[in-house]
Length: 346
Image 1 (cartoon, rainbow, N blue to C red):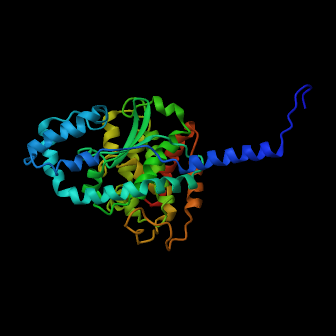
Image 2: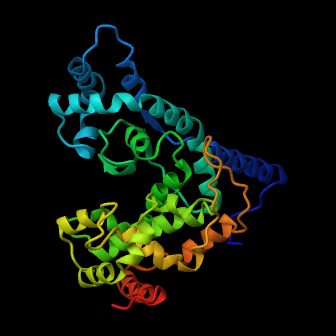
Image 3: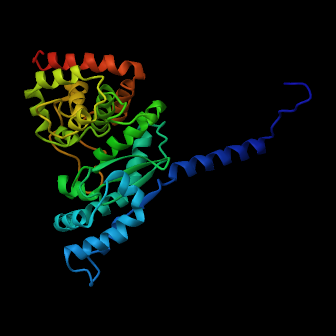
């Protein structure tokens, strides 16, 4: 003990400090992620008696949904003219029942899903904002920074169109939240822009590891659901030499067009989707998937016939969290190994 200073603490003080700590921990555990939900205003468009034509409904959509959230739409959908909005309203109307079903599911299940992910990844500290928005069929889920804050967007209209009302939201959530978790270990990524200075090998690992994580953290889900395309795995295997060659030749590329091509769900001639390609590398020893998906009502349950423990899966994912300098050589080696694994040499 330092001279002149008394560090003794009474038993009562210790209990008070422990109690305060427990209260703080409890508050953090039960805190809910902030949400912005644009769908109540969107659904209201079909409840207003004076709005009867697609054009008038599109105009109301722009005034009541888009314009109050102009920065969000500018950043993630681009400019929306009345003509574009009208075409969208015509296409989205038949999907309203599916969108309403999805909306009920995410509203009740997202916090539970986040709590599950935080249990598997205790150092997950994402504190962004969750946004449910009609994004004009731009993407199912994704996000990024907006005005200095991280946001995660669920485009329920796009999910309804692509996957229907029983879409596996747990897989989607795991994938997107894992992106934020992964990026927290690489703060230098915040200054990068895809298609400007982010190399392709980083995209391979970012998307590939997020896809791998969604499989490991949801081990009873079908592989076709993880891929979000039942035909993608067999199509990749049928085109291994071309896909691998294209990736290996362009690992250092930052070309915007190449990045966009690599993100298309089925770029069968070219580099395919690197996330799915790397997933084949990462789980080639796990291709025998449980043929039955988890329960479709709400977020899938955590009990199933599959013997793989998601906690073990979380450990496997962390083993692949590499230092930045290793992503390129590991991407190179993994692609070469994948070719040998499926017996299709370059």
